[in-house]
Length: 472
Ligand SMILES: [Zn+2]
Image 1 (tube, helix red, strand yellow):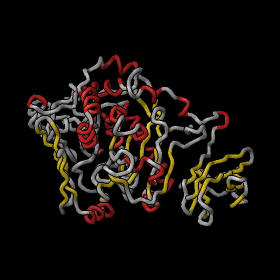
Image 2 (cartoon, rainbow, N blue to C red; image 1 turned 45 degrees about the vertical axis):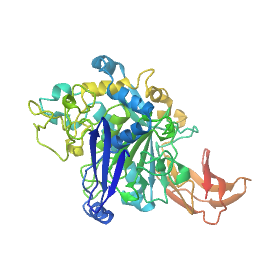
Image 3 (cartoon, helix red, strand yellow; image 1 turned 30 degrees about the horizontal axis):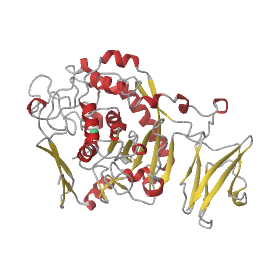
């Protein structure tokens, strides 16, 4: 048996990786749900024993298949590229789509659609600044580590053309019937919150992973209980026989998404500056945890490393906001460990940099022949379908499929919207709002409609937009 799960009544859960005969054994203790909810709802924070689920998935998948194990090793042990050369030549913008899969209550708790848009906006700014080493706090990198700062040529943009060619804001909102999704669930591959990645399981289907980087915003759980995990990446090299390509991408905790604006915004403690996504994108583009996920072992003493030579050896993950210099068993002198690296576990406000070699590896994944190359080959997805009629007032229709209440929310109050009608497949009108002008929020009770496919027709003064709707 390669992994052991042990439930007890501790408050938080801890992952301990113990290398034995070259394999990783994982022991998980899952804590009390009621206590976690108490912390979550009152002080908006709880322990961060295991912030990121990436190492768990990597371990589980390598135990399943030697093919995946080899793929992981080849990324981890990849020889350093000519850092400056690769980074200088890469200049790509990756189209990103966010699938917000939450209950109505969870969506409300982050401010509804306006709250989602605010978090999205700050989230995109954070990852773009962090990757470019243009983050305002980069000056806080200690002098000893400043020479290692790397600036990536990868940038990210919200997708504005959807797979069907229609205009999109770069996100969709799915009101789910599930209170959360398990990290090792039973739907899909069973790895990495796969249940959230299928509309047939009250989640959201990926958009073509060759063209879009998919990000799911969910309530993360483990065996039906709240977890400490705030993010998890499934990079393309992990997909194959066990994990389908449609599960590639990043999953984030809905309370670790975007950047805090107000003091009472709901966030997981230490994860309120948008850096969970910076960290997970690091995994997506080929990076590993800076301490090597080997529970204290050092690279020169039988342990694993992150495969990056300009990050100092490190034994364990850091937490909170340590004081520089911080020494450990693997880096006992000099600058000590680079706890302020995005690939460690410190609080968001204390994570500050990628190194040059980390950046070279990430940028290298976007070049011809590498697994993220295709993401840079569809730049038109970043623009609206017809730039001459750029929809300045886009809207979202959710949930779809719908059970009983369909919402249509505009970004701004529309002045050119006339009517909204729902037609069945035979063309018969089954519901309508005849005067839709001047209101940003519309809703339909669909409870009396038979299950099946319908068309929602939005009639504007100068055009008509038709959307498919599934009624369950
Ligand atoms: Zn991680």
